[in-house]
Amino acid sequence: MTTRHLLTLMDLSKKELNQIINRAKELKEIKNRGEIFEPLKNRVLGMIFEKSSTRTRVSFEAGMIQLGGGAIFLSPKDTQLGRGEPIEDTAKVLSSMLDCIMIRTFSHDMVETLAAHSTVPVINGLTDFAHPCQVLADMQTYSEHRGNISGKIVSWVGDGNNMCNSYIIAAEQFDFNLKIACPEGYGPNHHLLDEHKERISLCSTPAEAAENSDLIVTDVWASMGQEEEQRQREIAFKDYQVTKEIMSIANKNAVFMHCLPAHRGEEVSAEVIDGEQSIVWDEAENRLHAQKALLEFLITGNQ
Image 1 (cartoon, rainbow, N blue to C red):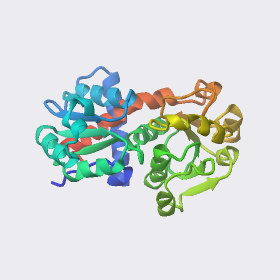
Image 2 (image 1 turned 60 degrees about the horizontal axis):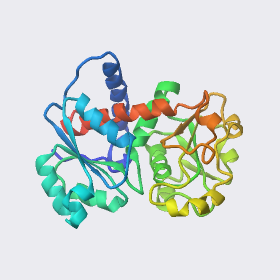
Image 3 (image 1 turned 30 degrees about the vertical axis):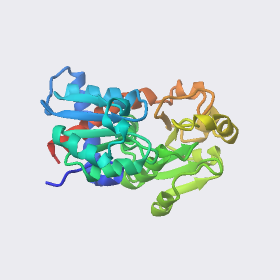
C-alpha cells in the first residue's frame, strides 16, 4: 500500500478531507463521553520541532496518548539533525522505528524531502509555505458552529503567509470562495493564486474583503523568524486590523478565527477576539480532535 502523507491539503481528496472532519467530530464526542478508544495502541509518533509550539505539540502528543499510542519529541539540538545529518538519512532511520512522523520547521522543501525518503506517513505540522493541520481544525470548527462551509465566503485579512496559502488551497478543497486583503508586498504565494484564481478575489482593503463574508480570519503580522521585521511590519499593516467595524461589514452571522497566538491591538482588537463572534477557543481545542482523526486515518489506513 502506498504511504500517504499530509504536506498540504492537496495530498488528500475532497472526500477524504471531509471524512476526516466528520471523524474529528466523532472522536470529540467519544472523548467528551469519557470513553476509552485506542486504535493506535503501541503506535509511536515522532515529532520533529525546529520551530517552537504550544498547540501543535500538545495536540499531537495528547492525541497520540488518548488514542493509545505514544509520541517522542525531537529537536535539532537533541538529535543528529542539529549536527548536519542529511534529512534523507534521518527519514530512513526514523521511519524504520516509528509509525508516523510530524515535522514543524521552516523550509517546505525539507518536509518534501523527508516524505520522499520515509516509509511511514509524514505530517506537515507547519512550514513557511503551509499549515494544513490548522486549517483542518478551522474547517471542523466552522462546521460545528455554522454548518457546511461549501459555497460560503471567507475573508483573509493581513499577511499572505503560510496560513493564507493554506486557505487558498482550502478554498479549492472545501468549495468556498476566498477574499484576500494584504498590504502591498505582503501577498500570498503567486503560484497558488494562479492555480486557484477561480476561487480567489484580491481586495484592496480589509473592509472590501469583509463585505458579505461568513468567516473572517487573520494571523500575526510577524511570524516566527520575522521578528527583526516587526517595526517595519507594524507600519505596513497598521490598517489591517480586524476590528468590530470590520466584523460589522460582514454578514450578521459571520464568525472570527485566528490560529493563535494573537497580539491584541495589532492584527485583531481585543473586543473582537474576546467577543461573541470569536470562535478561536473552540478552534484551538479542535486541533486535538482534527489531528486525532488525521493520525487515525494515516496510520491505520482506514479510508
